[in-house]
Length: 204
Image 1 (tube, helix red, strand yellow):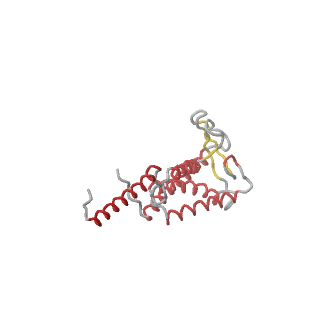
Image 2 (spheres, one colour):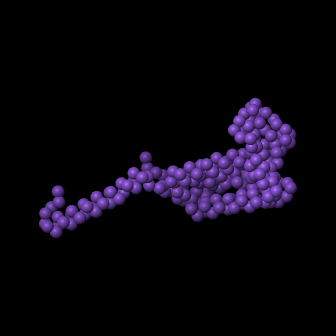
Image 3 (cartoon, one colour):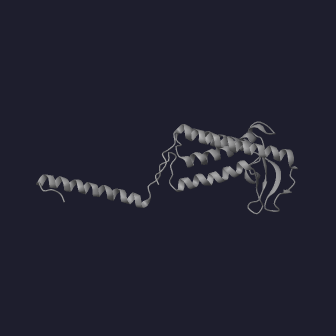
C-alpha cells in the first residue's frame, strides 16, 4: 500500500480550523448546559460512581492549582493557540498531525474562551468544569480538558513513531542500515562496469 501524498498547507489548515471549531462549539455548548441545569458544587450521579456531574468554577489549573495566578494560564493557552496556528499555516502537511493539532487547538480555545470572557473578568475568567470520574482521577474537568490531554498524548505518539509535520517519516533502523548497503552495491556495480569497459571485456 503506497503512502498518501502530503496535504497542501491550505488543506491542512482547513482541517485544523474545522476540527478546532467543532471541539470549541461542543465544549462551550456543554458548559452552557451545565450552567443552566446543574446545581453548583453538588454531585449529580449519572452512572453511579462511574460518572458524576459536579459543577465548579475553576480559577486555576488541574486540581485547582495556581488559583492566584489565573492570568498565567491565560497567557499559556494563548501561546499554545498561536503556536498551533503558526504550524498550521507554515509547516503541517500530515493528515494525522492536522487532526491531532486541530482537536488540541479546539480544547485550548475552549478553556481560553472561559479565561477571556467569563467572570470575574477579562483574562482571569474561571473555567467551567463539571465532569467527575472518581474511579479514574479525583479532578473535575470538561470537554476541552479531554481533548487537550488526549491530543497531547497523541502528539507525543506521533513524535515517538517519527512522523514529521510535513508527513515524512524517520527511517527505521533496518531501512537506515540497508540504504548505505544499497549505495555501496550500486557503486560496486558501476566500478565493475568501468573496469570492464576499460579492458574491453563485457561484464557478466
